[in-house]
Amino acid sequence: MTAEYRIAEDRLGGEPTLVVSAPDGSARAVLSLRGATLLSWQVRNEATGRLTELTDGYRDEKELLSQDGVRAGLLAPFLNRVADGRYRYADQDHDLLPGDHEDRLVYHGFAREAPFELAHATTTADSARLLLHTTSIRPGRYPGYPFALDLTVEYVLSGSELGIEIRATNVGDTTAPYAAGWHPYFTLSRPIDALTLQIPARTLIRTDAALIPLPGENALLSLDDCPDMDFRTPKQLGDAVIDACYADLTHGAAGQIDTVLTDPATGEALRVWQHSGYLHVFTGDTLARDRRTSIALEPVETMTNAFNRPEHAAALALEPGRTRAFAFGVEYMVS
Image (tube, rainbow, N blue to C red):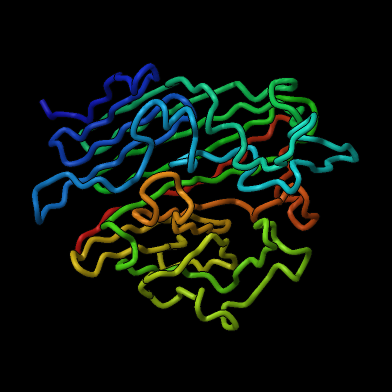
């Protein structure tokens, strides 16, 4: 009888988790049901014979509950910042932070802390597929978001690749603004300065001091005019400090958008893929722990503050009864 991938229940402190393991021990992932959050992803390096940790996720229950750094958080129904925590949709004003708040910062949506449950799982000798589901986004549950969404997150672990798809279904009776993304931190060596990065983007999103994109076309800066931030040709990160969004991403020969992080010293690389959207990059300079020991490469559907940008209105609109999906993933490679 052929051995299959295994899925086991476990806990991170008091938080329930799922541990997914390849039958030959060559890959392992740990998922928290809180936020359907990836806590760890390890793949065997065939040259060394050892499992290599490729993500810098939450290490204990306290970190997971604090959400500091939003480590591998799934971003929905909005991503990154909403300016001043306010937006207008369908001729109605909404406040994500009602009341008196000295700090009006709100970011990265609600899904990352939502309670998920395992709805379905399939295992074979080659892969494990898990469907995690939540119905927590309902009117009255989250201030400033009076819409009803069901979210399903599909994880597929197969050999040296991890695939993820976020699906949202509008189960309400009004059109909802919605966008999704992922906020993973990847590690190949410590620190990240020696790594090389390649991003197939033609445009950089310009922002103000609060990291909110500038109005209209002023937000778009050709990377031809900004060589320091241009990674179309692989370039060493060095001491670059980046917290920026890349746009006009170019599809490769296989039809995917591939961002590649490489450790030249070992030949190890991570290929982060997506089919559409933008890529946000954060070099981790302000993290509470282990600054610049990992890098966030974030596939996202829209730019920051999309809820307040008219050019994103059509892309955000999720009509009643409709479902929209956003897929992405990452592959570990050794040359």
